[in-house]
Image 1 (tube, rainbow, N blue to C red):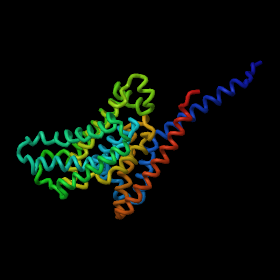
Image 2 (image 1 turned 180 degrees about the vertical axis):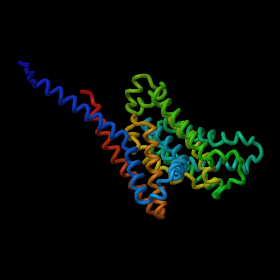
Image 3 (image 1 turned 90 degrees about the vertical axis):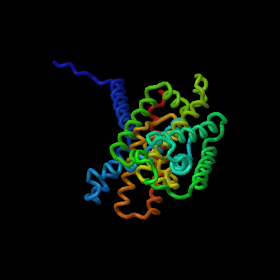
Image 4 (image 1 turned 45 degrees about the horizontal axis):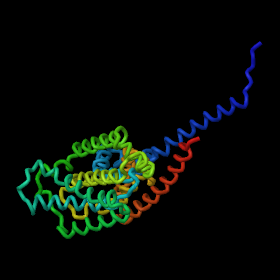
Length: 342
């Protein structure tokens, strides 16, 4: 006779616990990657409604290419959010950097800087602007919301004070506009930057310290991590990315627009948060933040295909910001429930 094994209560408990762990892993994966799912969903919706536009390969490439300048601003905001801070100046800073760089090349020091070196101008200016924000928040201990709100107004006012009119690409060195005007170069530089940033955040001591400061500044200080210094470097890197954005905006538009980046704060914020960067700090991946960027690009291009007015598009972006905050709240509650110590 075969021996019949009886299931004990302990066996049932182990089985249910295993099923619960699997369910939690699936749920955690979904909330972490929700931006990718939403991007695919909206792409399918617009592809069904407008197949002649969205189903073309060149259109998909253009959606991503046109989002590169905003993408660098998303990376800038993501770095600040991971450190547990905000930067309300990223959009205005981008426009200010672009205009100052243009004025140096065209009006203040024309034909002085070798053309290949002009590419470094917005990057150096970005580091300077980032250092200003980093000093105010990291070393002086000012509230990041109010400090960057103030610098945002300074950048925007300074931008219009310097030169409230566009500077056209024909007045700029060809190499300066070529980088942002070429799809292959733009996408290659952005992907390379994303990979380097992902590696730094995930595999270096600096990245570990940045996440630690964002997750718990008091605990990080007790572990010997200099909180102010980490804040400074977070804003410094954010400024560098805004400089990159200014460079690529100029190439994409073939002009330096004094209002470039001025409306990018909330889309960048929405992309980062929908992509999984926590408002609490210390959580999230820049790769998933790029998924939020692609989502915004798909929605923006889809609305443009239907000739939606800029006002309605702004309304849609406002709804996305609200949705991003709600998603962040739900995601954090799921993370806390699943990852909490037993």
